[in-house]
Image (cartoon, rainbow, N blue to C red):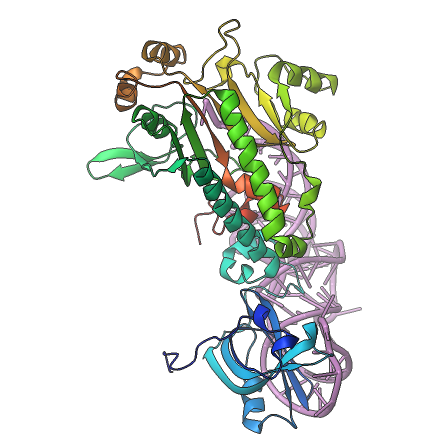
Length: 440
RNA sequence: GCCUUGGUGGUGUAGGGGCUAUCAUGUGGGCCUGUCGAGCCCGCGACUCGGGUUCAAAUCCCGGCCAAGGCGCCA
């Protein structure tokens, strides 16, 4: 076995091969997608990151040795094929490669654990067990090309708006933020946890005078949920800005989502077509606002019981989502069901300057104006039975000059669901972590 | 965690007390010079585990494990 490539280097991706380069010598590297041996002529379809290209070997034009090499191939083996591009009306895309050299770089075992050509569908569990093979499919890799473009666009948008990227720790000491369950871990002689959110760190960065920051990173939630829209490890796009309120950061979020929608349509037309998904049907911003008070009325008018002060049940989310075209803000939430750091309305303290961004019935983001006054913040913690002693390092930042600020966090994997039209969040994560799956 | 449904070749399925367990795809071999879900011929390959009922269980019953969908949980 020869482990080295030697002089072999790819000259073209499949997408670079067109009738215009007819006559040129090319070197392809990729996977054997299909082999169709008709006896006197062999067709081998090679797949790379960009797509498919046909290698055609007619027995009259190609050496017997090459024909033998091609017959030795197995599906999904990795090969390097040198040859000449040739315009051919009968070939897919009007062009094919006449091979002059075939080198097997790695032979795939048979049978395969699933079929990457999708002649036979596989269930999500089978697919995730062999995710590396599943990801070879164009309609799966398209999701991650769209997601990559999404993250690139988000970073560009933040940069254009003078928002600084930060990185905060995911190994944390505090289990006292309340709300979600945390994953405990051993940290030398201490107990520690995996971070559920960069929230407290983002706010400390406001105290540090960074004005506008964002972070894209993993968050961990130890909830035993088992749905199409929850994972125990997810990517959060978090933003926090000083000298701004909820309405200001809603505008930033609205702008970000709209920019991402536009960018996806512009840069990922091929992927959207592979997914057969019409992103143009989703309205861009500015997104409408629905006040919580009104949402309760809407839900009740659909015949679903909901008391003022409750969070929306799944049924309520669906009923409300059915009344909306696409994205919308749900605003003015009851203070009691929002975190300790939100700012209540002065004239009506039972509701607060907190919002969610919804896409139909799916929560994409939540945010708020944050309480920056130390004494009030501590009082709000105590109202929720949280012990301020557990928040020492965080609270310190509020004692020595914390500016008014606001921010939000977006579930990146959920946003990717909207951009790709998939209904299971596992589809938007390379190697998802859910209640039952910790591998691969 | 709860509810519902399910677990049959590598993959996806049909069958639902008794014949050699169906079909597709795959895979191994053969034929074939324009395939593009190639075609044709031959072969290969399976009843989730444990217990029970029965002359007889893939099939019915009980339990476990696993999965899919729904709900709950989710500052």
